[in-house]
Structure formats: structure tokens, C-alpha cells
Image 1 (cartoon, rainbow, N blue to C red):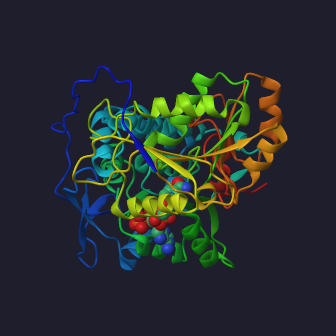
Image 2 (image 1 turned 30 degrees about the vertical axis):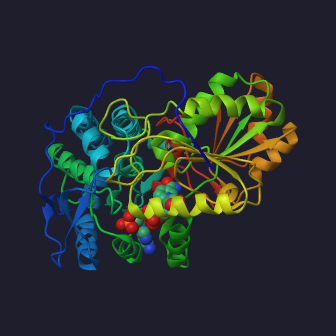
Image 3 (image 1 turned 90 degrees about the vertical axis):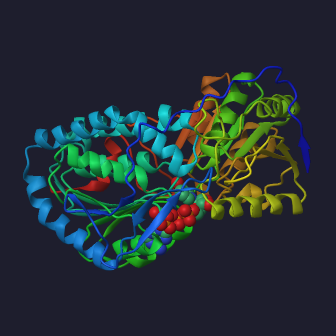
Length: 486
Ligand code: NDP
């Protein structure tokens, strides 16, 4: 392994910390059931911590099986009335939620960063605006549902259970709740154990928006809470985003039942750089593809495929660009790479990186002063990677990119598709026809051309193979929440 020093920074930024004085975080949050915060049946509260400092932020209730049942009962009571509302009335509530997210955007961004470790620049400029945009988008669909499904007559499913991970806590909640509610369903959302806070602020927003009790329930907890939700009989659909291993467990648990399921799972997405690409632009896309949100991104461009003729040039430019990444305090507005979300995730990253070294790949990690407390991993580049290495196959879910090379377009396609996953891909080329040809040969749910990690509520997102099934976003995101009557 080589750890190199920063080279060409000849000036530095002054510290630009965002203040947390304006946020309103309670000392303790209950479970949001029937429109109110309630104590859990077994009285269990657990602190949620800031991964950048390891300091506790608030105590949060853990939902147990009795709490899950209480949430389902309240949801069942609420659903017929919610579905019977005029479509425009349902839209009105979604618009209100979107506007309230915008009003509390600064506070939500700070809480997202404190609870999850992502740079404030990202929570402020990506997570929170996109969460609001999803509610706006699906508010617009609420009175046009049949047009989203080829002019068929449709009905809501009923009560839906939604389980989200810790990498985009509020945004994933919005991806799930907005289409479900627009379609006339009511929802029970289980946020991830390490990042429950913005979902609980969203519960306050639901109260402020005067959403009828039971339409949205928020049940923080751990994997057992999620598993209890999956086991509930009166749930019509489970929507899950997270690891392939848990997705598989959920699929097995629901096999043979009438509960519908959509899974948005992991990925090992190929970011392909052809020799005719604008290389400086491609390097920015590679950095955004893998170091955005510390690489805790299901569609991260973690397998970088570079055409052999430009390999050295791209790696040179990339390494230089990586040296300028600012790693550290996520609350500093100049930080590019923040804290790793949890001690467990840091351990998973370290294990896979060690495997990469053991298997003979060449590791380079940028040198930077990491804070003494908290969970950190400096941006890392692996070259001389073979397709059989674990770091070329498994999802690392951290700021680590594995580089492979190819000679021809056909080889690029074959290598990109040589994965058990199929979530996303990026293509960097100057030739439009090549981009379309390659994109149509890739087995990936989303293919970006000359950009990466570009999200939009109007576009469908989802995977093939072990990356899951079902689509979220745009009109395609309505289908999993509707049954077609005629
Ligand atoms: P998980 O799949 O374990 O967690 C995702 C969500 O599912 C969380 O809310 C979790 O709860 C919940 N959950 C856990 N076990 C069960 C269960 N048996 N039944 C129902 N729900 C359950 O992801 P991890 O956080 O453990 O991350 C592990 C790996 O998964 C990462 O290293 C990464 O590779 C991948 N991952 C992929 C994501 C993606 O977007 N595709 C997102 C997150 C992780 P709780 O948090 O309380 O345990």
C-alpha cells in the first residue's frame, strides 16, 4: 500500500462550520403511531449517536412486535378514509409536506448530517431538496393515477410496510412514502437503527400538515422491528431498500403469501471511461460516482472500467483530484467526504480493503488528518484489480474505487455485465451513438451518460439481478402501490 501526501494544495479553506443552534431535536422520541408520539410497549429507548464524534444526540424508542401490531391497527382504520378522499385532497397533504420540508430544510440538513455523518453540503444540496421534490412530484400524480398505468382503472393496495437504510434517511423515506400516499395507501415506515432522526422530524411535519392519524406511522427500531413488520398479516406490500442479504430473507419470509414486495438492494456498478471521453469531466464524474456520501450509495460507481489507452492518464488525473478531497468534519461546509456511518460499516470496509491488499491489488489511500474520535476512512483507489478479486465483486459501500481496464467496446460491455448486481452504470464518451449502443447492452436499471449519481423524481430507479426488482420514481414508481382493476 502507498499512502501519499497531498501535493498541490498551495492554499486552504478557512473553517466554515454550520451552526446547530437552530435545530429542534428533542431529548427523546417515541414511536409515531396514530398521529402521535407514543412510548414503546416494552419501554425501550436507545441513544442515536453522531458518527463523527460518537456523542449521543437523542434517545429513540425501539418498536417491538406489539408496537408494530398497534401501528397496523391504526393504519387499517385510517386507510379507507384516506383512499376515499378526493384525489386533489390527498395531493393537498403531499404538497403541504413538501412545503414544510422546504421550510425546515436547513434544520433537516443539519440533523441528517449529525445523525448520519454525511457532509452538510450534500444533505443541504441533495438529500433535503430531493426529498421535497419527491413529495411535490407525487402530489402532482395523485389525481392522474390512471395515466401512470396506461389509462387503466386502479385501486390502492391498503396498508404498506416500508423499510429504509441509513445512507439517505429522509430521501429514502420520501421515495417510499410519497408514491404510496399519492396512490391512496397508508404507510408504516421503519427507519434504520443508526439514522432515525429525520424520519422522526418528518413525523412532526406530518402532524404540522394535519395528516389524518394513522396515514403515516414511523417505527424506529432495529432489524427485529423490520422483521416484525414483514411478518404482519394485514400488510398488503413491503417495500425494502438495503442489503441483498436482508432482501433475500424478506423474500423468503413472504414467499407463498399475498404480500407484494419490491426490493432495492446493493450494487457494484460499472463506471466506464472510453478513450474518446472528455477526461477531466470524466474524472469529476468518477469522484462524484464513488466519493459522494462516503461511497454509501447503492448505485456508487465502485467498479471503474478505463480503456487501456487512457488508463495512466485517467489514474494520474484521478489521483491528483483525490488529493484535493477534504475529509473530516461533516458540519464544515467545505467538507467533501464525511464520517463513515457506523463502527460496523467501518469494519466491513476495512475487511474488504484488507482482502484487496491480500489478493494483490495495488492500494493507494490519500493522506489526511482524520479526527481522533468518530469513524473515518480516507478515499482509496485500487489499481491492478482482477475481475476475480473480492473488491471487484462485492459491494464495499465505502469511499473505495476498484479499477479494471478494457481494450474494446465489446470487452467493456462484457466486463460491466460480469456482476451478480445490475443497479446502475456510467458511460463516458464523446460519441452519442456509442453511448446509446453501450447503454442498451448493459444490464443495469439506470445508465448515466457523461454524468453520474444524477437523481430526479421523474425518473425510474431500480435494479436487475441481485440488485432487486421493482421501480421507484416517476410514473413507474406508482405501479408497485396500485392494483389494476380493469
Ligand atoms: P440492512 O439491509 O441490514 O438494513 C436495511 C434496513 O433493513 C434497515 O432499516 C435495517 O434495520 C432493516 N433490517 C435489518 N434486518 C432486517 C430483517 N431481518 N427484516 C427486515 N428488516 C431488516 O443493511 P445494513 O445497514 O446492515 O448494511 C449492510 C450492507 O448492506 C452494507 O454494507 C451495504 O453493502 C448494503 N446496503 C445497501 C444499501 C442500498 O441502498 N442498496 C443500503 C444500506 C446497506 P436496522 O438498521 O435497524 O438494522
